[in-house]
Structures are given as structure tokens and as C-alpha cells.
Amino acid sequence: MIKDHGISPSSDHYTCMINLLGRAGKLKEAGEFIKRMPFPPDATGWASLLSSCRLHGNLTLGKWAVESLLKLEPNNPACYILLSSLYAKLGQRERVASVRRGMRERKVRKEPGFSCIKYKNQVHCFMADDRTHPSSDQICRELEKLRE
Image (cartoon, rainbow, N blue to C red; front, side, top):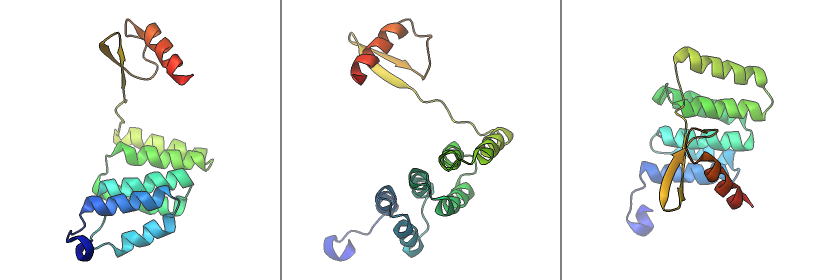
């Protein structure tokens, strides 16, 4: 990049490469890329690698990503959720339960996500299984139409 474009790669550029290699299933190459980086990945880079390890079921590299991510952000719920999902994908239920227990003990919680939908020129926000919105039945019907 420096030679061809006069641009020094930033942390974001390196994270993008980790993500590209990982999503493509080139986990070994992603690991080697990290080892050759001029600086260690930030939390986003490690989380990206961990996400790819979950996607492709690579526990060995996933453990390295978890250890590195926890050093940077020990209370990052994404780390625990991704590790739990990796164990679940590999059928290791006891380890899934252990990770979830560890989250409770450390009081690490994932904030629930939400979605928004525009219905009759109004924006309505809701969470999964949320039936408290006064128009939840209508919203669900609209979502079902989108799924078809």
C-alpha cells in the first residue's frame, strides 16, 4: 500500500484483511497474517478472527483469539457469546454451560438488540419476542410478508 498508493495501512486495514481471510475460511492464513502484523490486532480484529473461527468451527485458533480479546476487553460480552457459539457448533454443551456460568459470575451481560420497522409512516422499534408494542400483531404480519 505504501509503495503503490503512498498510504500506510491502519489498524482498520489490518482488521479488514483478518476479516476477509477468516470469512473465506483461510483461518491459517489469517493467523499467519496476524503474526506478521507490525502491531497486535485491536479488539475488533480479535473479535473478527473469533467470529470466523465460530463460522468455520476452528477451536484451536478460536482459543487464541479469545485469550487475546479477553486481555484487551475482559468484560466484552461478544467474546463470551462467540466462544459459547463456537462450543455449541462443535457439540460441546458442557463448555457452553461453563461459558454462560462464567458470564453470570463476572456479571457480563449482552444488551439485547432491537429492530425497527417503518409501518404507515411511523417507525416502531422492538426486541425479539417483544409483544409489548401496541401494534405488535400488525408488525409481525408485515414481517411475515417480507419473509415470503
